Length: 227
Image (cartoon, rainbow, N blue to C red; front, side, top):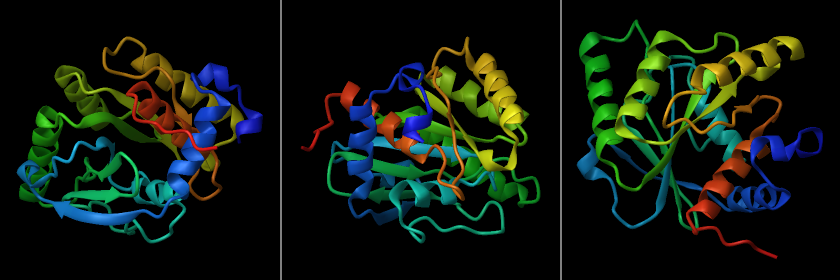
């Protein structure tokens, strides 16, 4: 993938892709699940979170990032993740798998509980450096996605869009969805301007997401390049 893209157009360098590969070549493990923000650790790690509509392919993307098939649970039942699931490895980074949103068939009390957890987490987590918001490339931004983006803008939590399931579209279709999504977020105050198009099944774009994470750590002064 790296050889097929213009890294400058994504704000990345080859060293960021190399560092991203190193970060995710380390063994990653499940730390714990948290049902309320007061159960979150305060150990100074840089925290990144992954959010998205139920069934957007979030668990598959996380597994692809770490190169481990079973780290994040995948399910054919949308809305399975009902807590904040934390993952760590050696180094300064923590990954947070957020509950999926927008699953209409879930009981209302469950939806309300998940939404309260998301809002409390986003509004009060100092360690949270960026939220990667996953959007199904076949459908683009939906109203419940825009609600999350509005919340992130209001709380000044930086976020970045990752398009998933890009292998399901023809190249021309994917280019249009990417351009439309970029235009939709162009004036949003907390949005990072560069998007990634990914396919967990094919592995497309996974190195780019890793590179974005490495660049974030680099910008925060928390990235150690290895020889």
